[in-house]
Image (cartoon, rainbow, N blue to C red; front, side):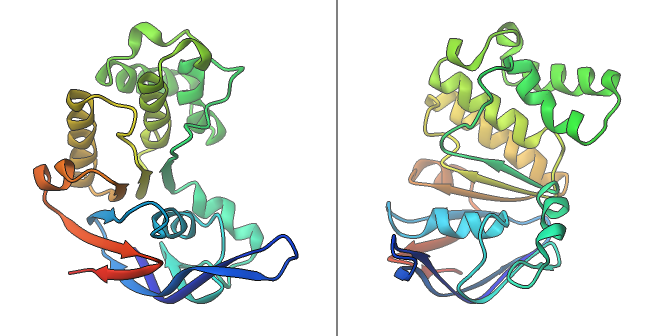
Length: 224
């Protein structure tokens, strides 16, 4: 499902030269239907690993393979189709401000060409499950941070992706909603979606035991 082989990553500095390495010699593999916690302090490299997994960037060295595609070698034209198989929950929400909450969630299905009747059914179902049905017609600016986070999560999972990547998905949620969200992720995982969740929380991995990969200063320090 995902394979990192001795991956290095350095972001260019303003002069265009490779800057300080964000990742160094990172290697691991995630199987189909796996659930993985990605842990580590701020600056450890978690977000860089997730960006590589979602084919947003290419590695500076080594091999990153996602759903059978070598990210470093793939033609640029092949990447959009790959990304459509990957659900991503960003820290910054990235909701479209001119669309309602309902239409933000519906957007991936519409872009995929789903029939409008099927779109309505799926969107209403996920909004109801996340206790957001009453806020469906509101714009992102009218929602709290936690509500925006749940809309972003609904948008990421509405297409039932093969791989779901979540970067601090519970950061704006209270304890009850955070546990409910992870229960949703666990159900998706049970149905076959491979899930990777980056978090600072120690409570969530303790309550939902799964494989843990821990990063520090761009290196893996623990990956049982």
